[in-house]
Image 1: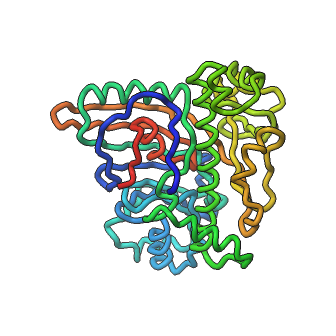
Image 2 (image 1 turned 90 degrees about the horizontal axis):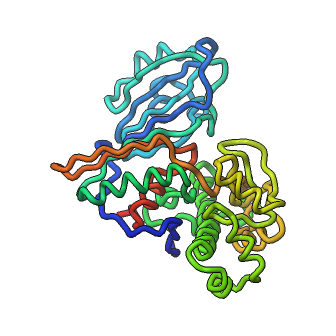
Image 3 (image 1 turned 180 degrees about the horizontal axis):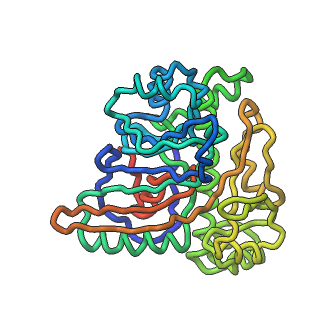
Length: 362
């Protein structure tokens, strides 16, 4: 990535070792709703190690004779992790599954049935358990303190480095494909263009976090000079109780889900924001997407590529709140295990980077 991420918090960086491996990184999906227990779809709760979701789909298709498109899943999970996720297949291939699924990398933990298949996005969020190495006791103690603070105050919802490929530059291919005007071919091209969408979102979010921290960490006169904003605007922004400043025309949504609304009263919206009742959203540019207005669109426009029409656009929460944060430290081995919940679409590595204040990508 050719930009430096701006962190929202002003504490000193922490030192710890992170590796995303099957022994250190655990994630479990939380379904969006309870399954009915009856119906024509078999729901599998699957534990997998060292296997991506797309590879899992391929293995299940081979075992059942299904087309990959007939296998439902809520979200993609990384290969380099131990993950638990839910998969749906038509009930009538259960015998073939029992007979032909042999790999030791897949363990079926539970089975039930449902009246409808699982679709992309049909999850509430994910529970994580991550083991960090080589962290001293004082940093481990502060890690817990700042993580609990972030549970209360929230964090910027950056896309994680995993979104942008091994060299962190897959978005460039996506931009080229998006500007070609051609219809997307297959899931790979769709993934590359969505990486470009994500890149633009991260750039926008980085800019918004930066200007917010300038206002939060300086007096009004200094912030006005640094931002080159009108003094009266900075005064209004500085009164907002939340560190992430809202502008007229921002699009907010009730948190964790609800109907989008434009910000008309910055102060009142910021109070609701600080109470976790709503969160601002950022643009994922594309077809049929709602764009912000007024001052907020002035800040959004540099990251809005209107040539990107091959994918449908969307709005993404700019700010999220980790939940159920717990840490356990072993002073002998200098290992810290951190457990937490994040809403769907959010990255555990983004949370850890905001705490550590360094890039986890090796």
